[in-house]
Length: 314
Image 1: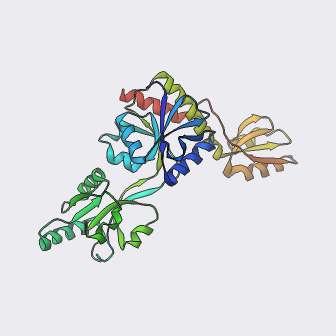
Image 2: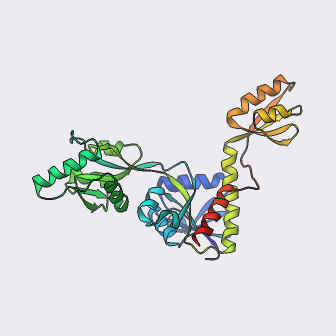
Image 3: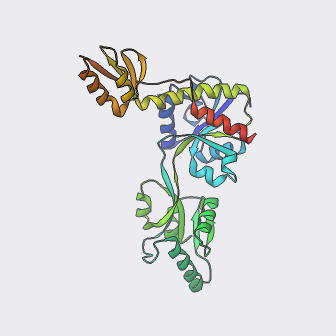
């Protein structure tokens, strides 16, 4: 693969949030073939191939090395990869699409509050019904690993093709392992999360494939992309402080400012008001504080870390 390949979620709130996140860094998505198209382009990044896939497909293709980078959930990557650290590298968590992978049981199971209780309930269930209790999930690998860590063996997995939370009410399973953000759907289906039943906290992330064929051209385009992404992330934490008199070295050191000129500096957002008051005390008549869109740096630590991991996996 010579050109950089990028995959973005194809529908729903995850797609909308991904588009907003990209647009904030100067990359506007234009979908080809209208709303039903599965390819797109990013304005500002012409040397990249953009695909629209489901979050699960993105995870699968990153692990297989058929994509360079993509936006997907960490839950899917952990569940699908046999060797997470060798297959993929999380470059940046994006702050949206947050959810937990959890173990839930019927709320009517009053004596089942922990995974240990679930194992005891499973043994009793098998004694009474002559079969193991069923656990419905889309997360087969994560479930097996977590249940083994918690010493729970009295169960059998049922792969869930649809709405997992409906399985107990439908009579197709007794327990579920599913993803939840607010817990409202679980409550609507009379389910409760076990006290120690949070398997994984997940959110949407920008992920690089360590198995993909990285050409020099693809890495060069990634650098352009990553520099803009990191510049936007850096700007969210800083403001521009402009004084009508030179900024003393003592204030620069106290508030860890980055001088742009003798009267202009970059300051962390949380220290902005304190910095302005300090400048007023040393003679400034006017101090302006302004938000900034991007702050580029010659040192892109996120990109360097990814390239270092890429070299190790080669």
